[in-house]
Length: 131
Image (cartoon, rainbow, N blue to C red; front, side, top):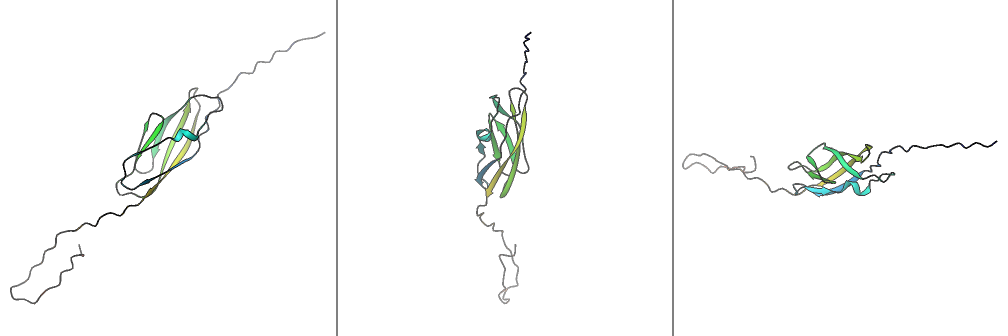
């Protein structure tokens, strides 16, 4: 005798694949937008969105599907932004965005100097760079 066996495979949602990103900007520059989803994917073909983002220094916000980063004043070096990518079926993954902040030459700050001396006294030396 012959029998038929039917097997139903129920799909499960796979989490998106979030890959690390990098960006470079100058110190004290205007905020930059980074499309961190450009190198992320989802094997199920689900749509992706950024569901959270935080920075170790400076400030970050999510604008649509991009991250806007604003560096702290006079900061240079590296900043790390951690972000979460979510798919339309509840899957989520976390990745990092490393931002290189290049230094710029800041103008020196000149402070006023004062000195007091007696009339007809010998000349005095004033170190105007001391303050």
